[in-house]
Image 1 (cartoon, rainbow, N blue to C red):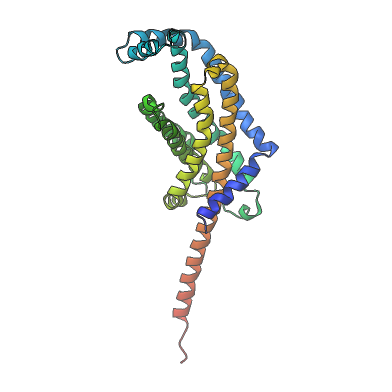
Image 2: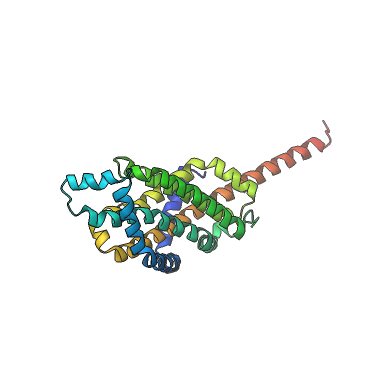
Length: 289
């Protein structure tokens, strides 16, 4: 039965599979591409962005109290690092979401293809309920929704205990949506995908939140450590690869779970069809009593 037992079984299979050299490469490829793109962008906007943030934090009635409060609390050098800190806090969600979206439509299909080489999945029929275009649209729409939620909740991210609740919930929700769609895009029909997402909504959400909690660890260090501000390029480079590895692990985890669920769904439908046919045959047979 696909359920809690299969969640743990697929977790173990994904954990082992992530250590395979090919999976490590699949985590490295999107990490390098996203790192180069964001590295160039940050290099171009770093100075003007910090100047704009400094002016905003100093003059805005909504944020000036933060700087004044820090100075009052004894952080005389707050003006020097408050703008970089806010910049890092704003850029982290954007980088993370872009990496997850990029992995979803560029790397997950390759991961599903590798997972399908397992003997129990080789006979699964491909019904192609989704495609590249649908994946891109679905990914961008989900990312936009998540980004809006991030921006609305960002001011309270650092308020205990919300710092330990909100980021995993948001990353978990986004991970569940993206991974579920792309894992099932090739093998399931749209009707089967809807059935599976409805039936296993809570296990999938729990898997997404667990993945989000793993991803929240580098997020928390990245945004709160003074060392992360001093060594921002190096720390961000390492943290981004950790994100990528976690997302590849999540893709494997969702792949094993959903492929098992799809296989069971089709087995159940086949059993129902055979049962109906058997009853029809029994009713049509002449009675010789």
